[in-house]
Length: 602
Image 1 (cartoon, one colour):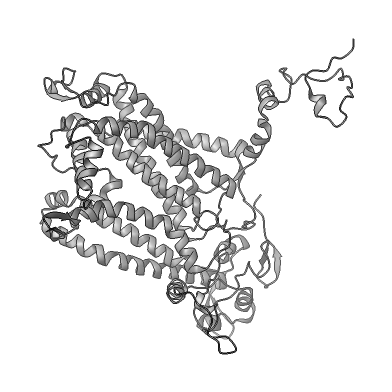
Image 2 (cartoon, one colour; image 1 turned 45 degrees about the vertical axis):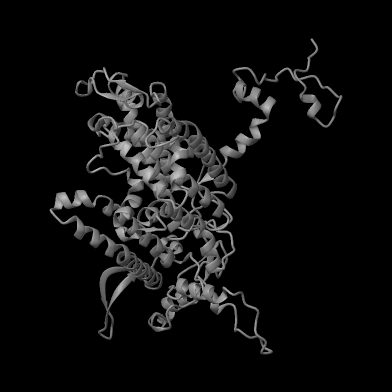
């Protein structure tokens, strides 16, 4: 029997029109004996999925625990989306007034909004509803915590440098959208606590000069509280903001794939490769398992730890304010700033009240924080003059000024966060709230510079310690006596793997030392930008105290010529070529100062 060709595969061959009969032993790709599942073959023949899947499955990801922080944010976002979809089936986003007649006895016969009543029904009437509510709230908090920790890791390791500045900006916008989404979410139940938060938002907008009143009327649909704010927040919370967050998250991950993943310094790791595990099968299995770990821990916390018990507060009443009320943690700094700003910033000019004591701590502070975060990569690149691509991360100690800036920023947040609960601290500690407010005002200006200086000194000390270890090795505690009666401590030399991470960093030089004199060899003044002097001054501030990496000559001198004492007493810092940079990306220098092939991870 003649073989009948199946399909039109022969049209894709070079010999068009020549149809050789299929061999008798050919296996149908749609049969159970085929190498690939029939569904994959079917999809590939129609959409060409094999090429894209091959690229995705071969993508290599480094293996380091700090990279899991971004995954925690991603998995928490997925949990929040799934549980939020469940809650939309029963939540009623309406401020229509009803009398409660549910199973929660203390509120029977109390007038409330339909939004608050439906929240109570989800908590007490719907099976599993309270668990889902708490899963949704906890996962939303973990989502923002994951973003914050991931951003800190990116900042302190310099992962935002070229070519990832755009991805950093996307991440900053994502963090801003996440806190807006969180605020919209915990405002929906219309209980006394969330209503107080909406009332605070109303005050923020009214503090805007000239346009404040118009803004509140536009958003609230009239006088506060109106009946439009909950439906509008609901649309933003379940539709607009999730669409933006998911879209930016996908773009964020796509840029990670395009730029390839960053990696920590180590043997065989350069700006031209990625050392790690491919997506299939190793990384996919680990990521899938980690998702269930995150989901399990979130579910356990949600089942055991109560959060946002709206039945305790009661329905919102504009005439009441919840005592001891604070927003979720990501808004503490703004609330704390409002409590620290002095009252004399509110004054009247031309019969108009200017409330800068509220305006500065809300409508100015919130966008200012994210603007500073967004422009920082471009500002640092301008200061340093570094236009190279970077795919290998920095240890925080090797960027002491940047690390100091990050710690100073964290100290500002901590001061404002503590100021947010100054009333509770005063009650629990038996202190004066006025004294606490004055203390936090002083700390706001004093603590950041102190934190910066201490952090920078610690980083420089750690750099110097690394330098000592490379030159002298690890201390063994073993005392040796020489033939002439001298005593010294024996040191154990570092192996190549350990040494690599201690010398694999740049030794930058302030820009003012690389641009030459202000006049050329003919005495003609060089053309300088008006900002050149300021740029050179800031660059000098960044790099003047840098401890350079050990060079091959220094290492050889320390090991063979006994010159490490002289090296230590020479000018500090010593600018030179790091050990691994002088002999190529793939070479080490052994204890004799000779170039050897860098050991590879297997």
